[in-house]
Length: 456
Image 1: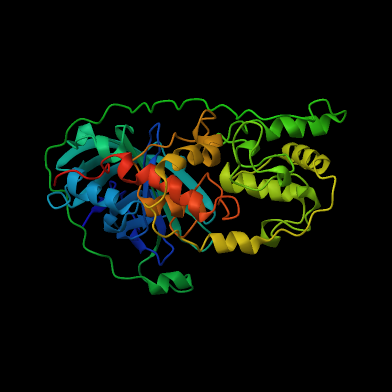
Image 2 (image 1 turned 90 degrees about the vertical axis):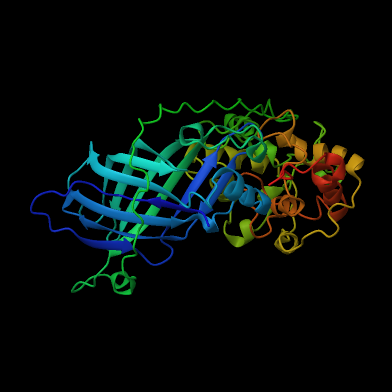
């Protein structure tokens, strides 16, 4: 069992009226880690959280207690990778816990919290992992909502070498040497109070939390400098409307072919969508098939996103929020894209059959390793290369890195897919035979020894 324990404690202020708070009923937050790298980020998450601490919202200095996060439920999307992480690198049989103890909070933005307010600060304490304990400063944020529920969030960087963890070279395949850990946990009062929120009536007794097992405290880790990502290039594609007389249409076309600036993911609309009539063929002039449907005649559809949007501008905003940035499109960007897509829609279009997409998301592929690996090498470039080849909008595909079932889940958005930046690819665009060939090339015997096949 892997369990990371986050202990939050500070020096109690005089005359404090601190009361016990415990982790609230689900959904009560999550703990997530990410390791960055050029091929594919490794991300894991768990929502199995418990714990308690003493807190007086009117005096944030009076904080003490502990939070336990059970990471035996941590999932990264690949079962064998999860097993390697527990056995080979974290050695959880010897070091079952990680502990973050906080002695005080400095640089607080406010000393007290009222409902609807937030407070930032810097928690000073130690972090224990893999048998080593180091001094640490952790930025934290307290948020008290209108129902008097408290959210506690923070971020810490964990360099593997500072905690005696052998860098998982094969497990993470050339990824970074540091894990970024983010946590956001909900707390409610442990004891019911007169007129208090209903959530306070349903909490469990505070659990017992193990104390730190290492007495010697090592110096804090040096400030982590995360490597810069390579700048992606937009895929080459024709721009037939470059001389359109309407400047708004020209602005929309430029936006369609350009990475949205200042966003979380470096993607352009053209990485997922073609702008041509695909009845002449799915393959575009740049040699790639787009994973999502063409935007040709898209503005003529009666509805989008299964009825969630009624205009192509609203649909574009949903698309950006889901795959690129939660902030969505600015009003000027939305207007420009809508103008451009309307120009690309000269003919009436039939209703979009979302049932095909939903059926795809329920359809795994059988006999995954019985495809044609040689054909799969060509097909992966045709169907995936617009993002994974020279466009560099996503990491290059690497043979031996993934499990066969995981590839299918990711491409078809089957439950557990973790396809944050990749749209679901319908069976009508990538059928079972083609996907089987790609999976065989990526993960089959000709791809070499499985990356996880190492002696125990």
